[in-house]
Image 1: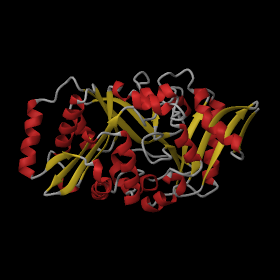
Image 2: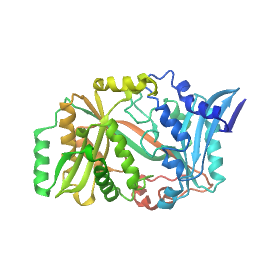
Image 3: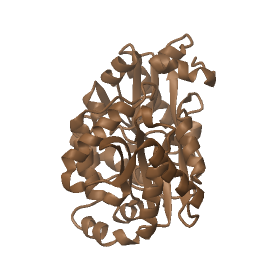
Image 4: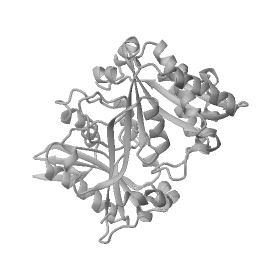
Length: 396
């Protein structure tokens, strides 16, 4: 007997949070999310996604045993900004059973249809980050970087009735392959020619740093960027405070021209091996291991890079990357993962390849029409539709 039901008790919430531990017991590379953060998300804290519209959580039980979960909702702010009628699903997990997975997805589809939505997409992230965004579709052998998705390979077959909505790329950089003198000289020439410089972030003045990051983000974030809306200063400020706890100022690089911030680059240590070891539990003793084993980390994840429009194609990304690259090498790290990069961001992809990046992982956010006619690109991508014409996809 398979039953799909809404969460209605404290026990249901606990079952929802603990299910991945059961599913991933045979997947040693899986990195569990921090339990305290997942509890906060379930309580409605720490999730701008859930704060911006109706949503519900569902569990699948088979003969009394929990075998799957899903959350479905409507991000009303995003829909309004992008002029679309989208629903999303997130936090999807299922045992290796097509009937279980299909029942969960059909529940999400029905929920969205009943609220007048035309399109269902997912998996998306409840934190608007990379952590649950997209399904890993290849390279299940390499360890996932911190706050990047990982899932069993059989999940790919579950979404055969869905089509590609968005795709994200990850690049691997080997720090033993030193950046060429030509690249270094090129960035030095660019800085002189275009009158800019790069420096490490000042964590002692975190509010000023947040203002600079927010200013660049608002100016630099392109209107076509899929499923992203410009953050508020408060969101950036809280993110900067968190960054101060987990990153090193030598990995956060600011580009300036005559004092004005024109770009920034953010990287942080890949704590995934430690998080895996403590099982995602910082309390009561996980903190100790987390702090004492920081020096054993070998990889850095480069997560964010923005440059304001008038300084693009002027060597700013390369200059910031060279600065961070040299710093992390001196700090003893051996590898960098750059993730994740939108498949539509041709400039970033070109920069990654030019810097020696190996495109080695791909993540897909799937989509499905909820109505009986094909959807136009405008209905799928809103005012960013023109950018997707070359993809020649029609959702039926």
